[in-house]
Image (cartoon, rainbow, N blue to C red):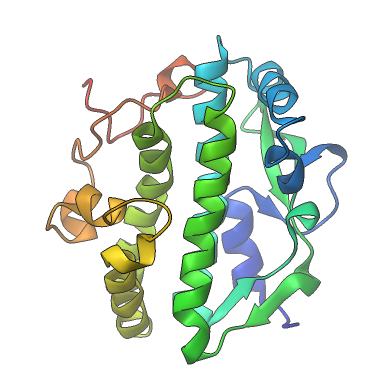
Length: 235
């Protein structure tokens, strides 16, 4: 266990990740991965977000979870720390943000741990495996492209690595982590190549900001209260 700083807590909150128990809990990450529950979770997410259909709701959910994955990698590069709790300990709850009800994440600060250098690759692999498991589960009940859902995750990584690589205090660790994510071998069991390397297409994260880096639409424009994302290929 490690003690999170005020800056870390502020950063987590800015990405809709909170440390207190949810006032209105709705499900856990374990539920999302349960084949008997995932259909209901998509329906609940659709109701909360007021998404027009299940495809938009599934995409919306992965964008919310993508912020948590971004915070995992950010904290690894910046602080050598990550959340290391169980799937049933990662809770989703209803919270109002910017005047709209949304699905936010709630975790226990006691589940954060220091990560040793020799464990970095395994921990990054865990993030990929978790994302893959969620995407696979959602696609078992919703007809949506896996590329759309992976791009939902990568959009947050793009910004975080732009920040981390621009900071001398985190540049070295961030560079190592990006190179791991670009390695095909780390994607074994998920894809036959690094989807993140394909997303970057030889460019640095900073060079892709405010560009139409996405190949698919995330449907953010179809969720009430949200806008078209800055990476949209439909612009």
